Length: 110
Length: 426
Image (tube, rainbow over all chains, first blue to last red; front, side, top):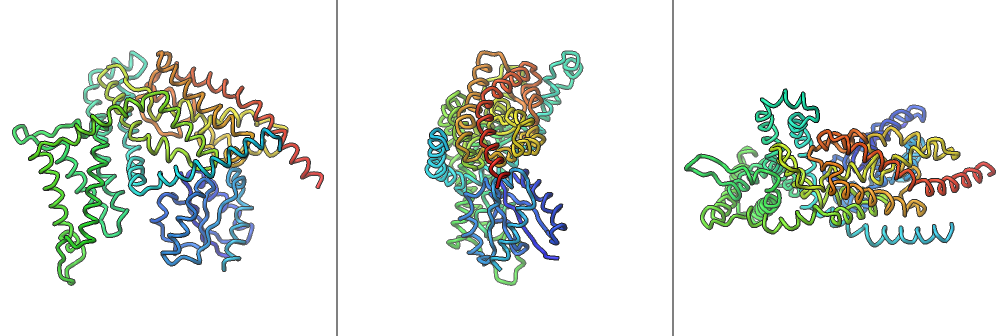
């Protein structure tokens, strides 16, 4: 079983809550053991990134990507990948394509 | 893509590249972001503080009469929560501003901010032993922002330039920390004391004079219009527009307005302000930003399988005014066909509709703060203190919006069907 620890940064952490549930539901079917939680994107400086293998950004906060990348690099997390969740998959809460993209992103950055 | 869509697409790109980035940058400015975070933390307190108002202003005469004997006591509960907004905000703001600087302790900065604010705006009258309360209400917010920023910036400056008492290394860290803060804290208190008590300079009164015209300006149809225009433009490019508009720049004014409305309602006087946070919920965010609920309903029985899925996934969240599914699922975001209705056809029209109806007295202005996720039809009833006319007006608006969405919904459905047919034949 692959292990994957993810944090989803989102504006209201309400819509991403659905994504968290979807990912937890389909992870076992993909032979993945997943730890996933959402966190308010505006407070990205107050999260402990040593807990995760991947940072996912909800589409409506993609404007913060460069700030977050800079912050992560400064704090010694230059190797931690940031993944933008594709818009339609996010909106329709399609866990499968999001999980596949996550696994691909982590593999490419290993 | 038709010529119409191409033109809309160009406008969308222009918004994404030229309009959104400066707004987002402004909104992410540290102090502004701290103020926003501090305000958001007080929202539940204000909602709870509105409950006594619901009870003292029940639309049913029999219940209102039954509660009349304790209405004064209910007003105490209202006054000490909602009525002291700025006092509670001072605690919240101190903590949020402190987080900008690693070396500052949020609790300590909260304490210094509250104390500095009281010294500056409501110093104690030793003859009567009383503190004034005007400065504790939402009115004092703007003076608080200034005091709060001075406090945290000076504390940071002091620590950076060693204007602190450094105890020897062996001393436990919390004792060392409290001693370190002593000197700059003392300087701050003396400063504010001199300004207010010795020089008699009332920053609260000064800011009231400066802010008053801005507050009056915030309560106009054009302020609401501009606010909603930016809200819609930002959301159209997929950015959470509310953080920078309604819950950003406008929020202190909306809070001030509803606080004054609530105080007026508690005193059984006429409600002064039209533009409040619930105003936007009632007339511009039905089912989510951009009045998307009618659109979701239109697509429930769509010929397009994709749009049926969008509608199915969006319906329940939409009832709670969460519309990310339909925004990103359709998508409405960056979709040239959706540009006209979403940016200009829905919320802006709703703003004018709500404003005019309130101005001519056909619906009530809101004075009760409730969560933004309160469903349509329920929300206008509660926030207006039980005025059924608000519910009827919102229902009519929903129908009007369905007519406005319809042609664009059909056009997008046509596109979706073409894409689905092309996928099938592949």
